[in-house]
Image 1 (cartoon, one colour):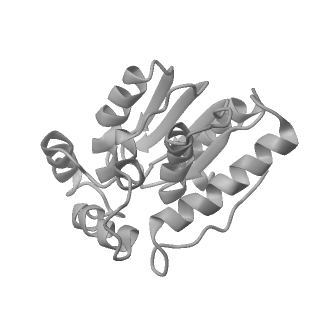
Image 2 (tube, helix red, strand yellow):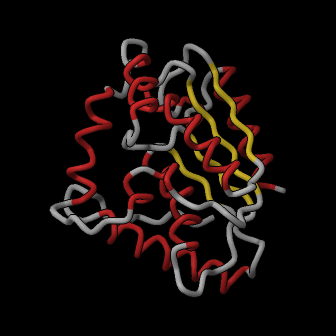
Image 3 (cartoon, helix red, strand yellow):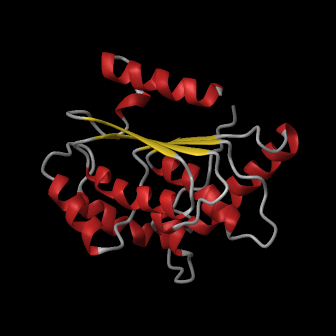
Length: 196
């Protein structure tokens, strides 16, 4: 298991984050071989777990795609009216992430740079072609759950099989803290996916 300590957008542009994580991914492919690497992430890490596949497809000579992607509450700057409306509708139920943050975070992600690929800001705009499968986990009561339909469309567009799990009355990234029944159950699902 690799856990990259990637450059944060408080001090770096998201393009630097992608460059570092993609280099880690390249080294993993070299070490373990094509078809033997999966990505998993929570929140911003979930966005990166997905984003590496999109970034890979944007390269002139892409590497093998991840066997599995597990994205838990992946971050997403809303980019269309329907997504914005869905996120705003969930804002009153979300105790951890405010809709306004998901809009203003783009400024930090760009870190003064205008020439940033769309998929780095809003992951559902990326091309996931070639990924083995993608598995989403959300609280059904979090703002980011409003992005799921756009991620589903992206998976369908790329002909990538996907699953989506959404638990009501949970908090953002609940399954990374397996101290209660629902979190333990979904953490176990994640573990089983990554063992395949």
